[in-house]
Amino acid sequence: MLKHLHIRNFTLIDKLDIDLHPGFSVITGETGAGKSIILGAIGLLLGQRADSKSIKQGADRCIIEANFDLSQYGMENFFSDNDIDYDSQDCIIRRELTAAGKSRAFINDTPVPLAMLKELGERLVDVHSQHQNLLLNKQDFQLSVVDIIANDAKELARYQQTHAQYVAAEHELAAVQETIERNRQNIDFLQFQYGELANANLTDGEQEELERKSDTMTHSEDIKTALYTADNALSADGSGVVESLRAAISALRGIERVFPDAEELTQRLDSSYIELKDLAQEISSRMERIDFDPAELDAVNTRLDKLYDLEKKYHAESVSELIAKRDELKCQLDNIENSDEALAERQARLAQLRAQAQQEADALTKLRTAAAKQIEKEMQSRLVPLGMPNVRFSVQMDKGALGQSGQDRIAFLFSANTSTPLQPVSQVASGGEIARVMLALKAMISGAVKLPTIIFDEIDTGVSGKIAEKMAQIMQEMGQQERQVISITHLPQIAALGTAHYKVQKDETATGTVSRMTELTQEERIREIAQMLSGSDVTEAAIANARQLLKL
Image 1 (cartoon, rainbow, N blue to C red):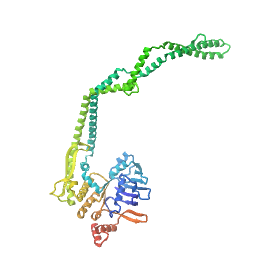
Image 2: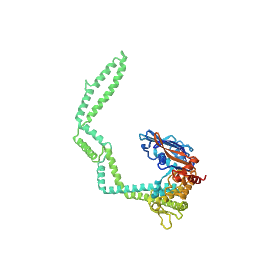
Image 3: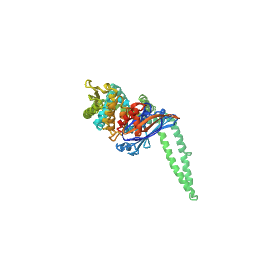
Image 4: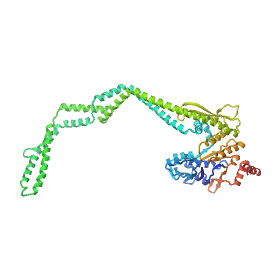
């Protein structure tokens, strides 16, 4: 329930702080006084798009804030799921707009995305404006009414999950069929490509090894010369490093007895001698293995050219990528060979999901059929007292293809007279009749959905007198069921039945025109309703009539 509304610097409103009450309340005021501004501010709290032009001229920001009592509506899960502090008796939602075009939203002082504010707003307040009467044209709105009365949310969610899997399976089957068809058309080409790569006998790492061998053989003379030079420097008789090192070791050993430090030097030289002698033998061995064979070099380069040509042809960077391409082609050919089996498997899966979806859709239809009968009966009983003694209201249900919401196609049929055949309500009902049908629908579904606050914006369009009074009684009854109902009205019969009465009016100030909203006292309320009855010239008769309407 909306307990308090605070608005600052929003269009014509400087500052508004107003307490609201449970039950049925009314808001009145002359056309253009600013009632739509109040609704616009509430709309921003419910997540509607913001416009910096809504900020009062001269202000740098506007703030709209509301306090709600949620203690009767079981919304704890929303707050825990979104990691927001929960206070059942005082939930605060706030929207801030800046002149620079920035918008921020808060729930209990926690910054939240606008989508989250909208999600919560839809569970807190339902604003029914005149344009919502156009919903009677929409099949999805009519279906949602039936679903609410059928209380089939779990069944609908289960069906929608199955239907989503069915649609995904359909797309998968179509993709597989397309791939199989394309592959079958290209099977000769795929077989040629696979054969070419398979016959190449590719080995991972082969290219790098061949490139090293080619480089070695191409530069064999240079390599052999360098190895010979190194070998000669190390092992030449009389002048080689190894021989000289051995002579140095022998000289040092001869003085170890008289020069003890020579022992350490000898050990170090000995280690170097062993390493250099081994290195000299390795260089000599490798020099002997270097041999230039033109035929072998030609074979190596021919193999490399083959690999380079395949890489270029298949847009590969290495032999490993060619091997991956070969394996991919093999997989495609295997899939073509096994395509009938794969296709049959997916077709069976699709058939299974369709049968499951159909079964769940039939269960939905059964629940909706029972709900449709209940709606027909209840709408009949609600509309007759609203000045339609011969009204007929029918819920037409036809079956269609399986869709996101099932297989049912819903149409609300209406006739206000026994002589007029039933037709879609939006096509045959007058403005006043549509207003009464919508009020009856709202009253009916409000009993099935725990919505804290419902605001009716001039739902009384096209009605007057006793019918208006009966509509007010319906709204009054709705407000007695742990629900807050607020009606913006121009009709005194409706205004008189509110437990609280607010007035919106414009005032001229030194800084310009401002709108304000106040809760009326009993005497102020008498005068306001009298003015609604007689116009600006309030007569004693109008005051007496107002007292009578207020039962004072």
